[in-house]
Image 1 (cartoon, rainbow, N blue to C red):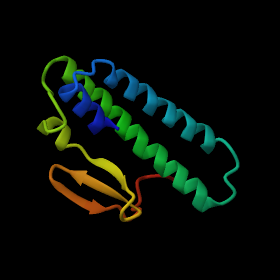
Image 2: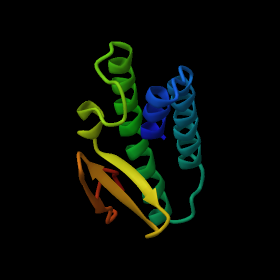
Image 3: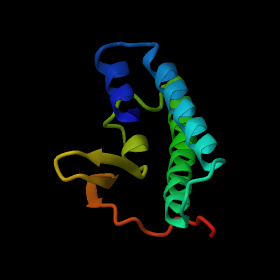
Image 4: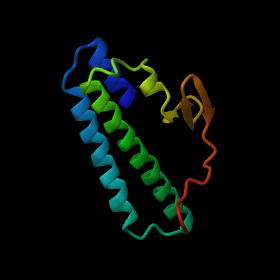
Length: 118
């Protein structure tokens, strides 16, 4: 969503897209946190949701850092290195896996340990 928002902001001159995307992703994070406060049935399910929360907190922090740079005219579009250097997670339906992108390198996410305690 963040890359798409940067694209639409730059190419389509959509001035509201960055704020709307920030709100959408904040709501998604709040939903994930609320789910973590429920009985998830198994330790594996809890670990999955805690991992999603960890990833979304990271993405939220990066998003607001990039948005600040957009406002300062230091980032212009989705091809700016300030955006490309970030770790970005995408779900690729054609391979049915999460893919991690950093700069111009991508690899399949293998569900590595991200710091969630058991």
